[in-house]
Structure formats: structure tokens, C-alpha cells
Image (cartoon, helix red, strand yellow):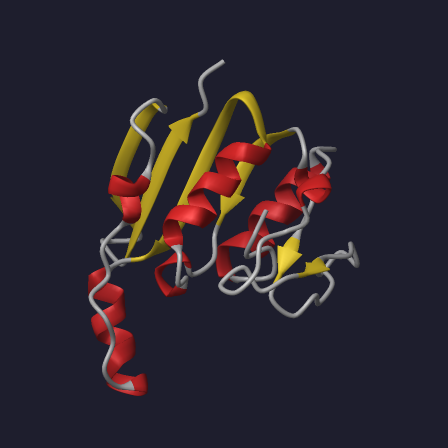
Length: 145
């Protein structure tokens, strides 16, 4: 899970760990989770994880700032590459509505466009929906079996 120490990632990691799931947690700074579980420091906006780090995962959650990635297509392709056939892939980020709100504090921003058009045509069950009172979006799809 990328964004493991962020607003949504913290809670999702906690729930998955409490359930007994194995979680490979990635965070930009490498800070441990509240439970003390370690995370792997990796800034996905500038680097991809080592391939062996994520080989054969069952679910990919990307919960952190894909809007800021220089190469969104490569990031999505890597999520697909490391996933087992049949894996569900989940991408969540802030929407244009949230970005406009943040601009009050940080200034100009590029328009936010959910990268659903970068998902390869052979992926299954592609879905885009608005979440968090339209302050975010959620893209889900499944890698073919």
C-alpha cells in the first residue's frame, strides 16, 4: 500500500493488520505505522519500488498523490505488473474540487484529472467514482486472470 501513513492509508493499514492480512506499507518518509509496524521509505513520485519488493501482491492500494507524479502511466503500469492475475487495483486521490481548496494555501496548481484514461484497455471492471463529498476520486479495476 502506498500512502500507508497518510490520512486514509493509516486507517486502512490498521484494519488490514488487525484482520491478520500481510501488508507491504510504503510511505514517502518511511515513518512507522501507529502500531509500530514498519514502512518502506519510497517517494513514488520520483522512483518505483524494486520489482522483487512487490512481486505477486493480491491487492494494490495506491492512496497517495498520483496527481503529483511526473509519469502517471508508468506508475499505473507498475501497479499492474507486480499484481497477480485477477488482482484488484485501487487508486484514490484528491479531486479538482479539493485541489482548488488547497490552492488557497499553496497557490497555483495544475488541473486534476483522474488518470482513468491511462488504464490499459485490457483491464477489467474499470470504475471511476467520486468520493469524500466530491473532494476525492476512486479508480478501481482488475488485472485479467
